[in-house]
Length: 378
Image 1: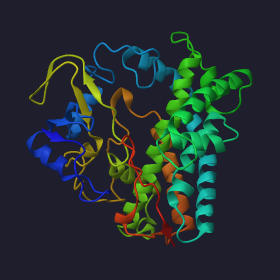
Image 2 (image 1 turned 45 degrees about the horizontal axis):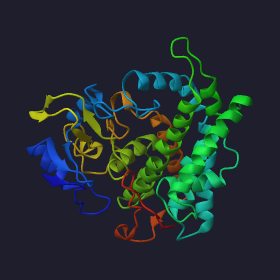
Image 3 (image 1 turned 180 degrees about the horizontal axis):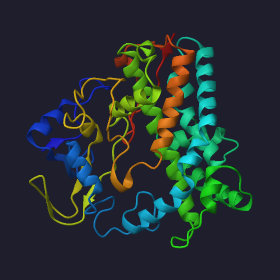
Image 4 (image 1 turned 120 degrees about the vertical axis):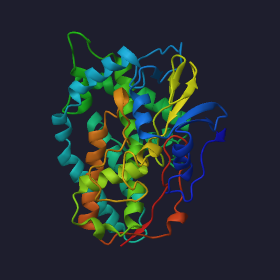
């Protein structure tokens, strides 16, 4: 039984263990960093199967949740998704595009003004998704909010601790929700509060609180890390000049495919009953880890998957998951990454790394790891 995490040749490279397991045991027993036994899934088709099978749930058998959330299962989760999707429509998301484009351009302008040695992570990769989130939630004074989000995400250096950040966030959101109820604005949170359905009713304050938290932390580090890691791959495989003639959305898909696993994974699933999966006898309560990174490196899904190819199309990766828990903010994340990439290629086409890739520090976040800083030059 192998121990997680598997070793990588470099911090930016997939582990070769996934390819070995695909040949020998597409579902295999492993030991998690916490010392718990689990099953690991490394095949794309098997990953899709588990992520859509109702016998595999977020919560272990018999677990009881006080409040439904987007990480719930079954009917409670479906209800929240239906209500939220009424405000999270393609038209509503599209209305955010001009502001996202403007914010990305302004941040890249700041990066250029700082000159060679500027840190792409702190100037662009993190402020972009947090700035978009503040706009979506109607947060007008985001400075303190930025410090909360960093500390609550396990990023140190902002002068505030993890527990303090969560306490202040949990006190702040009820106040924000109450203010939006009393005086709605043009923001997405006001639209979500106003949603009412004849069958599903409306979202309670507790549900709105958990959704607001999900909107912040579901899209913060995932987008920031995908951008940072994607830029490293672009700059070490030909630079931004290589993609000047390519549509940015296509390049973004390859950035997303290659960052999965390096910057987050699907939440563990738990078997609700005894079952046989790809010849393995899985017992009720067993933890199952669906490795999206491994699925994205499966030759049955992606031809020549080990090659970083910004021109790749089609690109049916699973970086945003699959099935009922497919990331609700996938379109928004794509929009943010596309805006950042377009701003970089337009304003700083000579962008290059200011240090070797192996010298780039990582945060060490166990749930969503990524570069702690990324010095660039131009």
